[in-house]
Image (cartoon, rainbow, N blue to C red):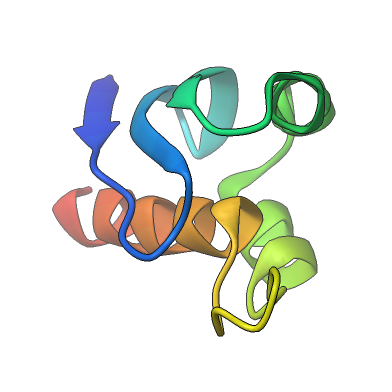
Length: 83
């Protein structure tokens, strides 16, 4: 299933998340810090959604109270609610 998510409070503008059977198959992030977001995309590929939420939730960036990894967990929680 492909889901698009618009993060709030961070530099990235759009996340396109492909999931199947509770696993992240691919993540594309538009906007933001290219190197960090490529690293995040590579890290979560093949990861269970529950594991990504546990590891990345609550990570702050620059005093914003959220981050691209944290915003990804919000998207993943929405995906879980749809299943």
